[in-house]
Length: 441
Image (cartoon, rainbow, N blue to C red; front, top):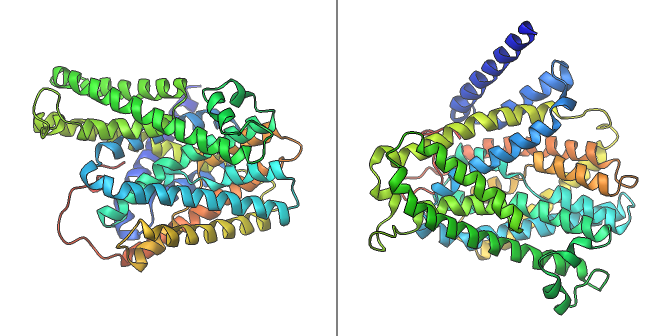
């Protein structure tokens, strides 16, 4: 037992050293540390069989959620809303277009190429259409992109996991009879719109209505929580462990928003943005708490959450690699290639159409944005949920999802290589996302 624990702790230490080295070398090698950690996990699990992935499925899901909470909160803290609001429309349009086109494209591919029925095809489309924010956000911090472009992609990434979870959840409910829609917070709204389950257009209408409701609810909760926390923050910022107290507030906000039916991950990012941008209630409207606080405490919260996010996400990506199941991948390889091709075409169309709102981008920036379509833990989790809902028809979805995860993360590597040709930023501007040169995240 003692020898096993010693080996375990030694392995954890070695993984952290590897994560640090990969993070430092990412600027030179152009290989995001996410890819290095994923490959390490694949080597430890499916290749060498040193780690049994079946024992870590639930742990990995928890690590993934916690990592995403920390990453989104840190991204919110670094958002300068005066500049971010200019990119909010572009990020939202890009997120909705990318998810919608991918969803429709994959669903049609399943119907006509894989010969699935309508509802299983829709579930596969909703599962594989969402990008992984936990993969994109760390990669963005290591790419030398203009802040306006990076902010747009950060805003898009903050919607990814929520869109996927809501889409799959609504479709599973409709497939099982629409119980949640009949008893949830929106029955009157859906009924007045003629969107009761079974009515024509009910699926698209229900998803749209619930998405809008959940995001607006999350925004309201986050802004209110941010205002209240700003009143308390100056009273505790000179106390020891006040950063831990703020972390506790983030977790409580996540749990509360989820309980009342809002989009919890979006609320976490909005809470961070509120802390960094809402005016100090004790002073004039031009004063901000994070600018009034002494330099050390105001930076300590950024440093604390960045360090904690680095620790959690390092283990998360290794465990995600361990969970890759190579059994059955060969059967779904051709299908996964077809789906990744559909996702890439949908992404190209979404990036081109969103240029109406996303102006001033260069060809190289659009190419990098087009390649940044990674799938991650959220895809694996949603695939398991969909299989449980329609097990006979969707038994193939789990290995298919892992194949899509691997292939789309290869595209991330190509995006990092292409990003070396991005025009470097000449003059400093308000930072939207903290560079990994200052804090690893």
